Image (cartoon, rainbow, N blue to C red):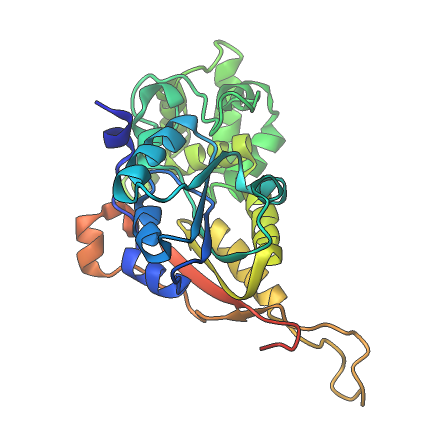
Length: 323
């Protein structure tokens, strides 16, 4: 199977994303999570022939597959594909030597190939080694190292805060007890421990019992929430007036960060209402375009089950006069 077929995927909320980005011929667009280039393939047609598409991904295999797909759709276009984390967006866009961008997309979450490639260790199915690094060549800490070195308090914290796991403390205790006998190195080892820790009655609902634990480990290993905060702030700085930022998140932790970022940057004067003149000097930077997140309809969820948990938020960059 070719790289291209491995990385082909159904883009979530495609029509809604294209409408929100509001791109035109000649615009500069940044896809911060290029993956299978599902959204970027459609964007390319809208900004061609004089526009610039910048794609960012930590996975070199994804970049190679995207280059093949994008060149097939618009051979005359020369997309700029950069390997890196969107948390380092400032450095990446300085490298790109662009004065500003017209629209930017974050489609968060793990891509299908990363979930499906056994050796990457993201899935809780099978005997894959506990890795979970988005960029194995850059990060040194693996999920196995977290599981085998963090104490009970730290494991409890990440399971609770990053996995929103009700049984976080109990799972952490069972992990520490199990590793005292034998090092925990594979997904099925950890799944068995989680199942033992969670009471049988609680395992009968809510999907796979290890789902939240594995999510928490992936976020910890890749520092996903810190990277998201950095990436969002950088994206807004690089947007040109009138430019759009579109973010699709897949769990409440991500969505909360996006909502708080947009709210903070859309806030104007914070002075007490009885002050005759503004002294804080705060001016809104963003106009929020989606008071409530946009979600996939039943038809799309049926066609693409991974769209079920998607939440999309959109904001527009204001000029210095707040327009």
